[in-house]
Length: 145
Image 1 (tube, one colour):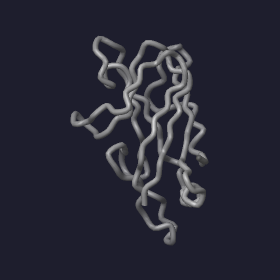
Image 2: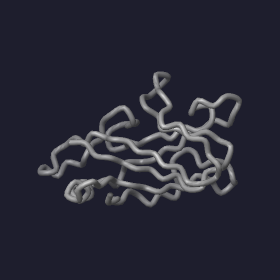
Image 3: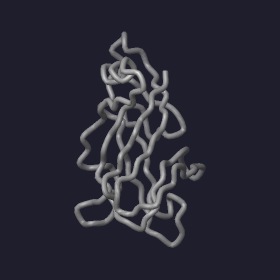
């Protein structure tokens, strides 16, 4: 089964380029490239859900946007040169898929046109782009429509 995921990046620093990372290692592509003006940025992707909810197995996630090991999967947002900008700041923001349960997936599927959504801070406490594993992370919620 496949499910849409939506990431809202809240107030990232202006004058930087952001992108969703498709692929891993040196063989990745920056997609949905956006230039920040300081307003929220939005990214949308489809992830394949694997596993068997009837055996109490946790869901697993697959696809070109999914990074990391089983039970530690995440999505990267690329910043600056990683997002294809030249002569710019470089970093990545790691958005965990932890906390996405079968009941949350079922709720999203039952509500036609739904997705799972998270909102993450785009700016760290020091005023620089938020990078590494996102903190604070409020998790994923069902977004209708």
